[in-house]
View (cartoon, rainbow, N blue to C red):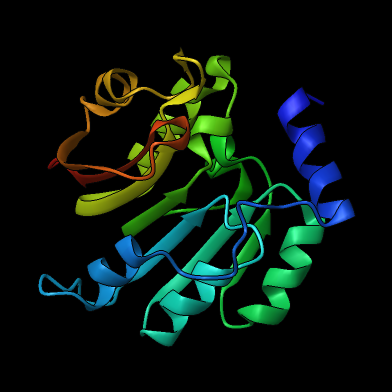
Length: 189
């Protein structure tokens, strides 16, 4: 088991999960309820954790699939979002989990930047595979670990996703770890 998997399982076991506020972020609310509202369709929450955003999407008429590798987090998600299809597994192997698209919305709130570099290309391939043409990928990522050490810098995200997605918006979040929001649109196949 790689260090990040161990860390997340340990964190959920002991209740240390500062990333899980239990509140849907305003960037997702804007996308679902804002002036350029997305019509409900199929959504996947990649690294869904305890299901806060799965529930939000369900409440707004979406057909939702959530994937996470931490059983304890998914147990909470099943109670919180009982109408969602929730799967335990590796987000870099969606097809092996039986996840099939096309999805109109893909949500990644902090999953990509936690994936080891060697698995990131697999993640991108899987997301490309399940995305419908014109689908939206909303991604939150830390740009650096601290002191300028990159985690998921904008240049890396643009490079990795450019074959299949147009980056249509990059929005700075809090300065801590250079938090950044990306909105990408799947190019026609």
